[in-house]
Image (cartoon, rainbow, N blue to C red):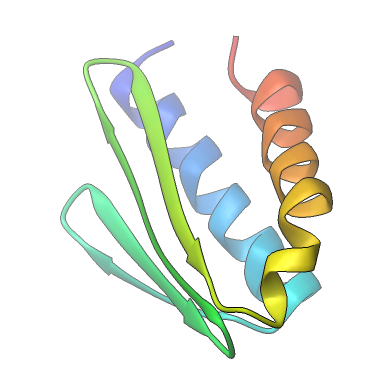
Amino acid sequence: MSRDEVREAAEELADSLVKEHGVRSRWDGDRVKIKGAGVDGVMSFDDGLIDVSVKLGLLTSMFEGPLRREVERFLEEHVS
């Protein structure tokens, strides 16, 4: 995928997380910071790779599995 296509997929993923999980997102170059109640993360892309790193608080940690599956599903469908 081209850099623009990877960025577009990353933007769609960030938008999906905002809508589905009520987090806020803020872009800084090729990184988007994701923050919400019990959620603090960064998503970046470089050289065709997307890196998603999320820290979950104690109460939100029970959603790790569903959140991980949602991110993986989205990337499988949109990044190939």
